[in-house]
Structures are given as C-alpha cells and as structure tokens.
Amino acid sequence: MVSDKSAPLRAVILDMDGILVDSEPLHVLAFRRFIKGLNLTCSDEFLHSFIGFSIEENVRRINQTLLKGREIDPVEGVRQRDAIYLQLLHQNKLNPIPGIFELIEFCREQGLTLGLASSSVREQVDLILSRLSNHRLDLTSLFRSVVSGDDVPNKKPAADIYLQTLANLNYPPGQCLAIEDSWAGVQAAKSAGLRCIALQNQYASADRLEKADFIISAIEEAIPIIHRSIRNKHHDKNP
Image 1 (cartoon, rainbow, N blue to C red):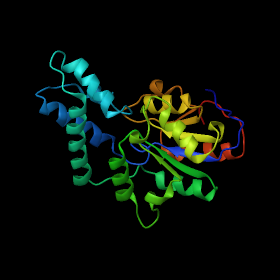
Image 2: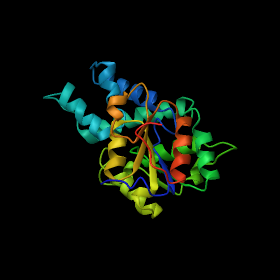
Image 3: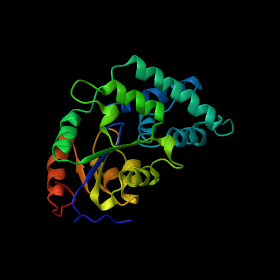
Image 4: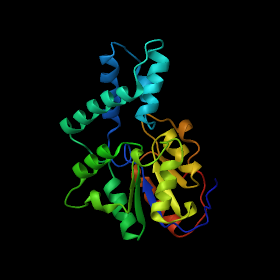
C-alpha cells in the first residue's frame, strides 16, 4: 500500500518502546536474564536484533537458534520473559525519550490527533503510560487511540496494529504519519500505507530503516517534518 504524500496531515501515531519511553534497554535486559535462566548465553548483537519484534516471535527465534531439540513452549517462554520485564518496569525509573513531550505538545498545538501503536501487551502499555504521566501531560487520556499487541491477530512487522489504529481514528493512511525506531515498526507502518519517520538508535542502523520516508537521529527533528506535512508539501527521503 502506498501513502499519498500530498494529503494534508491529520494524525501522528507513535510507537511506544524507543519513541515514547526509553524501555529498549529493559527489554534487552529481560531477554538476557530469561536466556541466562535457560542456562544459555548469546551475543549482544543477537539480543539487539529482538528490538521491534513481538515477544512471541523472539521466543521462537530463541528456540530455533539456541534451543534446537529442547525447545521451550512459546506460551510459557512469553510468560516467563514478561514476568521478568514487568519486574524491571516496577524496579527501574522510566525515562521518556528526550524531546518526546515537546513533540507531543507541538502536535497538540497544531490540532493533530495522536495515536499510540505498540506491539507490547496491554498490561505493559497501561503501566508505562501511567508511570510516564506527569503534571504536564496525562498520557493515559492523551491518545485518541491506543492499540496494543493484544488487540490484533498479528503484531509488527505485520500491518495489523496500524490498520486497527486507522480504523479507530477514522482517517485514511495518507493523512497519518507514524514515528518508529525499528525495522519491524517501519515495515508495519509502510505496509499499512502510512508515511513514516524512523528514529535511528543504537539498536537500528540507518540501512535497517531505509524504508522510512525520513530518518532522524533525535526526536525533535520530527517537528519540522510534521510542520511541513501539515502544510501539504512534498518531501525528500531525509529532512
């Protein structure tokens, strides 16, 4: 599906992990502890490759790569790994991605609708939104649509989460822009027909994000892109 870049922008849809909150290190640590609990070791590169994919998919990869012949039940693997992650969420301070609150406030000032599209399960999404909320922004009520991995049959990189978000917002894909930080997230957004900004980080090199319409190195770089999109201009690959 190809988005209409000439359409005026009406909505900005944010990924959660790595865009709204700096939770990717906790995801990596949870997988590290989960794998250690199976009496296994793995490289940092292998752990970093999990970013953006569902927990189920990553447990399947652990089975295929590290546990051939003695695979763990995927449902039990997800349960164990998520229990570790939830414990880490409660034990550690959750930090918003630098500049994300300013970006959100800019979008609100411009009258844009905001959505959240995450592959994480609803319990994790609700906990993170609650803990990140402050006197400036109540994230639990800020987004018109919040879609979690529990709400769709297939998680990212499938398009389901974005298609459900579009249905909830009642906007065509050409009037929406996604902000993602992983290959899987970019793939999901583009498959649903959205324009997409990709935030480059230590887990995703630029070549892994090349399907995005824009690649940025800091979240505040999204503001001029969004401003130009509101004014209905065509864009190049990068700002």
